[in-house]
Structure formats: C-alpha cells, structure tokens
Amino acid sequence: AQSVAQPEDQVNVAEGNPLTVKCTYSVSGNPYLFWYVQYPNRGLQFLLKYITGDNLVKGSYGFEAEFNKSQTSFHLKKPSALVSDSALYFCAVSSSSNTGKLIFGQGTTLQVKP
Amino acid sequence: GAVVSQHPSRVICKSGTSVKIECRSLDFQATTMFWYRQFPKQSLMLMATSNEGSKATYEQGVEKDKFLINHASLTLSTLTVTSAHPEDSSFYICSARYTSGGVSSTDTQYFGPGTRLTVL
Image (tube, rainbow over all chains, first blue to last red; front, top):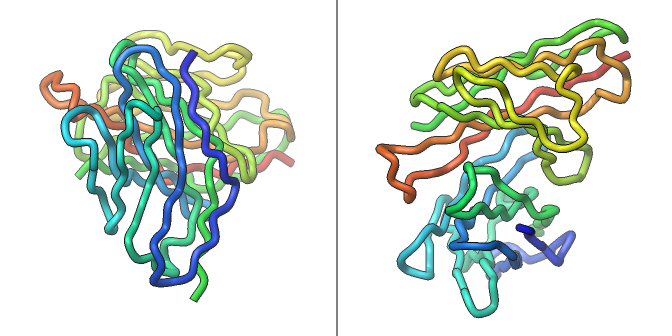
C-alpha cells in the first residue's frame, strides 16, 4: 500500500536560517512526489514535484527538494527561511501505476520566527 | 496558468438542506477532478474521483448517495451534499488533474481554494 510519513508535526526555525521539512514514502512502482503548501482557510498551492531525472528539484518561492531513492525520502528545503513561509506543508505521492490519486502525509506546520 | 476555482468559498445552511459546490479549471481541461475533505489541523481525505462523462469513483466509507458528484464538462465538477447534517460541516477542497499530451512529467493536481461548509 502507498503511504507518506511526515514525522514532524511542527518545525520551528528562525528567519534567515535554513529549513528542512521531512517526508518519507512507500509506493509500489516509480514514485511521483509532490510538495504543497496551505495557508489558513485556503486550498493547497503546488510547490514542486519529482517525476524523473535530477534528484534535486527546484520549485516555487525558493524551495527545493531532494529525492533519495535508497532512503525513500523527499525532504523539502530552503536555504533561508522567511516569516511568510509559515504555513502547513504537505508531502504527497502517487505512482505511475495509478489514476493520479494522491496520498498525502499528515502535514507539517512550519513556524518561522523573526 | 493552472488555476482552479471553487464556489462558494463559504456556505452556511440548515440541517436537512442540500448544498452544491462547484469546481472549475479556468485555463485547462481536466478529464479528472478529485474531491477532498479536510478536518481542522488534519490532512486531506480523498472522497472521490470525478471523471468527465462517467460516474465518479468513491473511496471506501464515503456515501455516494449523500455526496453526489457530477462532472458534466472538461472544466466543471460539482459536489452536492444532500440532506446535510452538522457532522458534514467541514472544509471541502477540489483538485483538477493537469496532463499535457499524455506526458507523465506534466501530471500534476492543482487545487481550488476550498469551501467551508457549516451546517446548523
């Protein structure tokens, strides 16, 4: 069965410091991996995705994520956090063998303090 | 590009009434749309997959007679919550699947802004 784990409910960082939001996955077949961000009372905004190719994926707002097949991880990173990055972040996975259905992690709240 | 809208953004209704939520892909055609439900501070729960021109596929435990889904065109899917009750109060989010010429690298879901349903 497909699954996604985000081991941290909340991540706290100081503005200007690097941030990492962790994600590990389990999927049969080749994984398609996604990161989305959600602001309060809003839908999800697409940040980036990994389908194939370079393991380091760059996305919106300066975020990037690294696909690590051996560790089945897809951690989200940003070199320098902004207060405005504070939001709820979701990792999601689908596989090449399904109909596009996404399986979401439980979400990680990122709090960036000035 | 890849914008998805939802209407209404917020609705309050009396118990026993029905509520319709619209999901539109504004700048692309979507043969597949998805409906999710989200409880406070929780992840998204997939309710159903909406396929243009065919019946929706519901996830286990989701009542198809209560949550009616219609995908009448390539840019519009609707979710109707029938005979709503307070336990149906939630944040409902739709997404539209964007694919281009069948190339898997463009297969991405874009989400609407969500609809807050409150049933009194």
